Length: 443
Image (cartoon, rainbow, N blue to C red):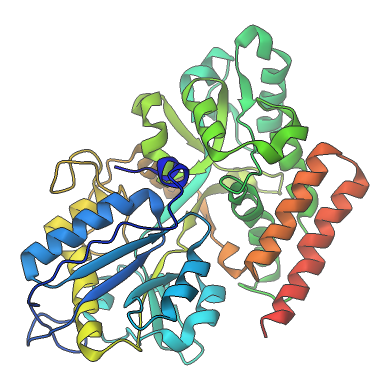
């Protein structure tokens, strides 16, 4: 199975086509199992780390139903570019994804209304339905994910601490800086490298940046804005300072550090903390389930002792309304099968041995009635924490554009090499002025 790292290093742009011909099993126009259809499915997959599983699941569906399913996977960071290219072709995707309201704004004219489809009846919460300006459901979340500070319990204990000692930013800072003082003695650093190479920078220009956005939205009672104020940018600065000054590498070399570097540092015991998410489980599992821990990302906001894990989705399935009626029928049937059949749900939720071939499944938590118990320990840890704490919403789907993220990422990288107030002013400009500029450009 290709993981995220292997997929990127292979240099694949659009990968792995499983186009399997045959007669379809049929359904009605809203994705039920009655009637007949002569359609086919073309899924443009967003997640390169799950390419192998989607290829196998497509083949299993074709074997069971006779409906041809093609899966193509965009390379990491290239989904929007690939989608634009594929949508211009005569054989365009019948199933694609958007990352939330901002993504939907770009593709709303392609989205089939899902309100009365079978898959909507499988959702456990209306929160997982993405609605357009007309109030109609245009997308449905197919995976719920979480991210925070993954940590190595054994190393944390070797440094003299336990998770219970870390309840807010001040206590996290105290632990991290103590580890840094003793890193030669201990043989490890507090944090892995905060790489700003394209394979890794999304962890900070998007996922870490979600925290100041979340707290600003919460304080102002809003869920989106065309003019971010940057109220919590001082807190963003102090967590970024903590990451880059208590890490495995000098802050000046972050532009060259990759996702592979950070993962390798964590699994080989060179650092205690690693900011990433539940999707990374397969790449860190060798640390051992009993040795993996998860903490919220604390940035220094009042009351954050009650903060949970960042949990949500930026993965919304959309059906191409411009596809043929038969292809729409076939696509609706396919996604409903994925979340209701034993084969589909085991593949999406399971870990080792969950695929028909015996390979590992996707390890997802899915927001549907037939969600299977997770074998991904990071999912389970997130659920345990969020049972008692308030989860942090994924607000980054409201970021105005990829260009905005890139501007913030570039400013963070420059600041890391020269940590002055002037350097941080450039981050604030990218964050606040860049947001207003990109929001206006999208109108």
